[in-house]
Amino acid sequence: MSTRKSDAAYAELRRRIMVAELPPNSLIDEKALVEDLGVGRTPLREAVLRLAQEGLVSSLGRRGYVVAGASPADLMRAYELRREIECFTAGLAAERRGADDLARFDAFLQQIETEIDAHDRDVTWNLAVDEEFHRMIAAASENPFAQRFLASLYGLSVRSLYVSQVPATLVKEELETYHAVVNAIRMRDAPAARAAMAKHLTFGPAPLAAEMPGGQRRGR
Image (cartoon, rainbow, N blue to C red; front, side, top):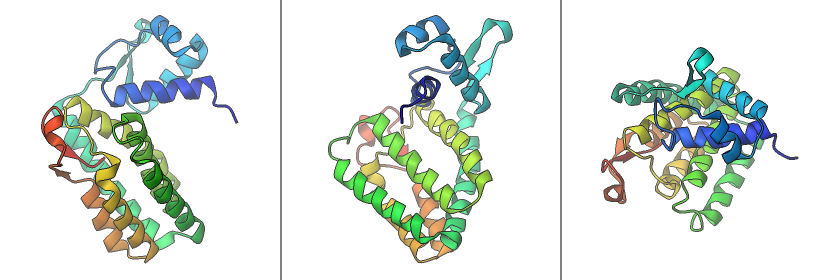
């Protein structure tokens, strides 16, 4: 099934905002984006409205939209809330997961392990993989509110990292933690699932940190 133009525009604009290609307080240039993204004004406006609902874009009324502002405090505020919800959700997934959830986790891990070398430095791929991992855990929790709020919090927290020049770790650096979370969910060990998720979302150094601005990285 083909992707709707508004969905494609939303995904690309969200990515650019998350990795700070469109920096905080920058104007959403509708004319330029229509040409750049190859979409009409209506799909673009639908995409911008979705981003506004997620807190990534702010309205200026008749003057249009800008990328939402960000301050250093945003990093910790988005992080601390998301971390609590994600850990809680991982525990719920351990308690409620079904056989279908485990099959999806296993297929997901197998796929990324076969693709990881080819996409090692591909930011878009790394972000998509990590977000899918968190989405699957939220789905396994069988809590639709967790799924809804985490989708928004993910974009805000990742954007705060890049704006603060603390890029997220690469998927290859998180594989061990991914497996730890999935194994805890498989064993229905809620405390272990929460602990593994907390480790994934904890600040810390990484071997490649020196290559990145700021010199520090953390799990998404």
